[in-house]
Every structure is written in C-alpha cells, then in structure tokens.
Amino acid sequence: MLYAILCYANEETVFTWTQEEEAAVMGNLHAVIEPLAAAGKLGPTGRLMPTTAATTVRKGRDEAFVVDGPFAETKEALLGFYTVDFETLDEAIAFSKQLSAVNPGSTSYEIRPFYTFRPGEIAS
Amino acid sequence: MTDIAWIDLALASARPKALGALLRYFRNLDTAEEAFQEACLRAIRTWPEKGPPRDPTAWLIFVGRNSGIDAVRKRAKIQALPDEDQISDKEDAESDIADRLDDSHYRDDILRLLFICCHPDLPATQQIALALRIVSGLSVTQIARAFLVSESAMEQRITRAKARVAKAGVPFETPSPQERAERLVIVSTMIYLIFNEGYSQADPEQEAAAFSDEAIRLARLMLHIFPAEPELMGLLSLMLLQISRRQARFSAEDEIVLLEDQDRSLWNQPLINEALALLDKALRHRKPGPYQLQAAIAAVHSRAKRAADTDWVEIDLLYRALERVQPSPVVTLNRAVVVSKLNGPQEALDLIEPLGEKLDGYFYYHGLRGNLLKQLGRITPARIAFDRAIALAHSAAEAAHIRRQIDKMQEEAAQPAAK
Image (cartoon, rainbow over all chains, first blue to last red):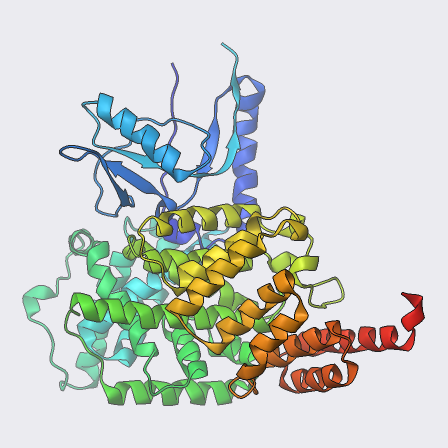
C-alpha cells in the first residue's frame, strides 16, 4: 500500500522560525525519514511554499478560472498530488485545466511550487 | 525547539490577531495591551501542563477579554462593557470564538491595529517604533538598541506617539472597500519602512537586522489575510529578494559588497524561488504597482547567474515603468545607474544633474554622482561629491565604502602609467 503523508501546520508560526530553528526541525525530520529511505520505502518528498505562493484553478461553468489562494475558508480535502516540472506558471495552469476538464469529481487543483525536491526511490 | 521557545513563537505570531481583536473590544490600546499581556502570562503558566489549545489565538482573545474586563471593573466602572451574555466563563466558549473569528474577521482588526501606528502626524521613525512595540511586541530595549538611543528616550518616544494616536482617535467602524484599500497602501508603506530601517543600516549580525525579518513576517501576515492583493505579493516578493542577499552584502571585514561584486552562491535560493513565485502570481493580475515593479527589477538581478549576465535593457524598461507609476527623483537616480551601464557615465550624469536640488541631502545621490565623475576622470569634483556623501552616510559601513572609492581613485590618479 502506498501512502501520501501530508503535513499540515500553522503557517504563521512555521514561517517565523529563525534559520537555526528551521535547521533543527529539518534535521530532526531528516533523522526520522532517513531509515525509510535506506530501506527503499521513501518516495518523492517535497516541502511546499506557503499557501500565499499558491494559485488555484477552480472549475467554472464553462472554463476553469484562476484564483489566488487557497483561501482560509477553503474546506475541500486534498485528494492527491502530481509532481511536475514546468518552466512557467502558465504551463502549470494549462495542465491543471486539462486535469480539471476530464475529472468530474474535482473541484479545484492547487498549484504549489516546491522549496526542495527529493525524488526518492521505492524498491518494491 | 523547547516548549518555552515554541510558546514564545506561538504568542508572537498570535499577537497581531489577538491584540487587534482586544482593541476592537476595549477600544483602548492600553487596556488591550494589558489584557493581552495577562493572557500571555496565563498561557505560559498553563500551556506547558495542559498542552497548547486547539486555537491559541482564540484562547488568548478569550482569556485576555475576561481578564481585561476584570481589570476594568476593578479600576472603575466608567468604561461601557458589552452585554453580560457576550461574556462567557464556560470552557467551550473558546471554540465558539474560534468559529466566529476566521481570517475574514481578523482582517480589519489587524489592519486597524497597523493603521493606527501609521498616523500621519507621526514622523516615520515614530511610526516604525510604535508598530514594532505594539504590533510586533518587541521590547523597548530591543527597539532602543536598534535605533541607537537610550531606553528611556525610546520609552518616552513611544509613550508620546501613543498619546498622540489616542488623541487623534481610532476609527472603529468597518472600513469601506475604498478605505480598506487606502489603509492597505499606508500599512504597506510602513512595513517597507520597517524593512528598510533594518536592511539599510545593518549587517546581519546587528540588532536592527531583526526589523527586516519582522517586516517580512508582517507582510506574510497581511498577504495571508488579503491573499489576492497583487501589491502585497509584490511587497513580500521585493523584501524576500533583498533579504536573500543578506549573507553576500558584507565582507568578512564588515565592508559593503556591491551587488555586482557579490558572491551569488551566498544568495538564499529558496527565498528567491518563493519571491519569484509570488511575483509571477502578482503580475497575472495585470495591476502593476510600485512594489511589483521594484520586485520585478530585483528579480532580474536574481535571475542572472553572473553579474555580467544582467539584463540591463529589461531593467531599464522596468525603471521607466516605475517612473510612470511612481515618479520620484530617487527612482530616476536608480535608473541612472542602469543608464550608465547601457550608455556610459556621461549620459547618466546628465540625467542626475537636474536632481541635485531635490536630492542634495541624500547619501546615494552624492555617492553615485561621485562614482560617475570618477569614471569620467574628473577627480576634483568627484572628491567633493564623495566628501558630501560621507557626511550624509547612515552607517560606518556606508562611510567606509565611500572612503575606499576615494582611496582607489587617488591611487589610480597617482600612478596613471601603471594601468
């Protein structure tokens, strides 16, 4: 079974960490995930930029439209994620609109740039 | 991170929301501050034992409100209080408040809190000091050290500023969309002032450098509650791009390192990436403003792998756009640097000479003028301009930077054949 583990936190606190505090937290996290990586059980991992850096493509009546966010009021659950490499936000939006068009269950696709990316490898 | 460090951070990040809500409730800044202080003390006592509440901000507002009411009751019964049924002593009231206070409710509270610090009667330095004290909760000691004044002088300055703001009265009604937009502009300006206060005069090791981080924190907070404001994205992007160069701006000897001489591997790439993402988003709104344009200029520098790769033509276009949106002699002065790169020092000098009257008290004007004259081999006028710049320098590092240029110029003048 594959799992996606999604980390939720209070952005207002996390983004006030000093560099030292952040390094300490990341070091601790690294220690936790490294055995998993060594065992060949760690897939792609990424740290997302804050939601203020995010853009949402929301389903419209005709064509999907683009809004900033996610907004704080957003109540939809995150269902899955793609990791893609695009040159520009426009390409990412075009791709998301394609996804939106063929997926009747979706309400929105959130586009979040990565801070860091580790491809990972799953052995089995 | 220790428990206490975690609590400190949580209290600091909850402060603008909680204090803003308490201010709306008590309509008096001192009462609101005391109430928040009391709530913080109780948090430090109870959170380590019971664990943090689900919503720390709502907890602080709830506890602060009740302790503020007690305090007001004790002192005198002169202040009008809300109806009793609004004040609950039940434990579950916390979640109730949390439900009612989502981000859209906090918006105007925080905006009001910041807005009262930007009172037009207050000089910029007092606006900054007041915001850092009230909104950010920095200690008077910290602020005094950064401004290089005594603690008692800073205490006095803040007290006087508070009194002036209180006398002027704080508008508590919900602002109209236009008023809100106007306040956002004023608050953005103040946040950028705080940033510059820290950034222009301090290397990363110095006290005032913390102001830059605080300004970024406030901008993040504002963008969080106004997520679709392109100028807020531009402001945060601009500050992130500038701060990304923090480690490269000073040499090991604490000397200023110019942008073109900086070791670009020292630039903080994650911050640059975030800034570029924000700028990308902002520009899609097609509502360019001064912060977006300045961020776009900073972004061109950040995208160049080496100084020689800088796209000066693009930067020139952006500066021309900035001159249209926000005409100012300082913007023209900055564009002159670009003109000197593209068309040489004489054309740049012609551009800035007419600005002399307006910018006579401005360090960078005389610094740039001296530099252009130096490039043209006009040693004596260059020397006069440099001397004037030194007299206007804000920091020892700025003065030392100009002195090095003078020394270099004199060395070159003394041995013209060596070149």
